[in-house]
Image 1 (cartoon, one colour):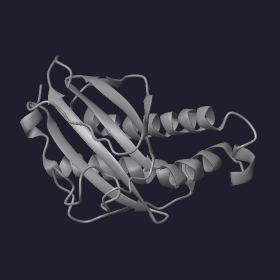
Image 2 (cartoon, one colour; image 1 turned 90 degrees about the vertical axis):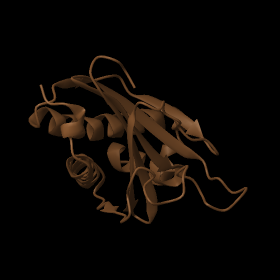
Image 3 (spheres, one colour; image 1 turned 180 degrees about the vertical axis):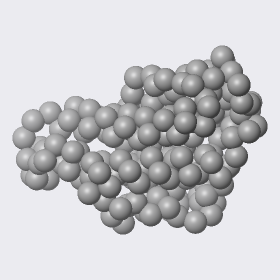
Length: 181
């Protein structure tokens, strides 16, 4: 069984970049571009919200975990306007049609599924590298002016993407073995 230390930062970056690109291109018709300087804190201001004090736009954050030989969570941060656009693209709706029903539930479902697909592609990359794992159920977090703070023993990598002029953030938390992150 490979150890977590054997998963290079380059492999992690490659898996997450491939996952975001494959899902966003196929499902949304968008071409996400990685933003340079991604590191543990992504080389960008953290949390992944506006850098102007007092102006923190709302975000929709999908999260899906993976458990097995490697355990982890991926948080997919989408600014609310992009979450609405992604929902319309996934459901084949015009922006005006989204408000005709339960808009919040539709967005939650769509972003949950988008996150599930993205983490699924990432997980498949881990499995192909010898780390058997399976997905957990998706959940949604909504709000502004918040950040996720993992425990010390967890490997954290944050990657930023520009997609249709919006900053999409993947916040990856991983730990090797049977204990969860």
